Length: 124
Image (tube, rainbow, N blue to C red):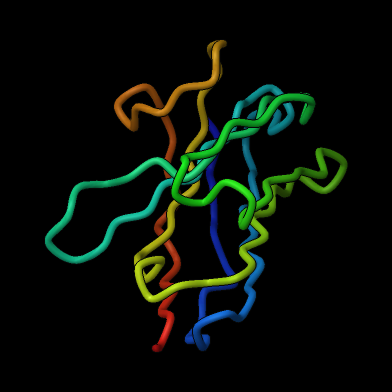
């Protein structure tokens, strides 16, 4: 299996930026498609975006399109979620998740491995 660890969450003001990291260990990280999800208190886990194992394909939720960018560095077993123009509604715990099977999925149930999450709080 693969282990995933997120980092980079913080308190930031509206309009600010953050970059989250997801570091993988265990099985070959480059074999896995990685998704980002977020969950605010009292709400269901929400798809943010995902990137293919090769890094060539990405898909984003409409709510973050144009503001968030996913990239990965397989040589460093790391995937990044760059978040710009942050809004209070982006406040949530952010999770990365791994999936070995194509295609990219927006459904959290399709992912096999999860990190522990990192908190992002955007103040108004």
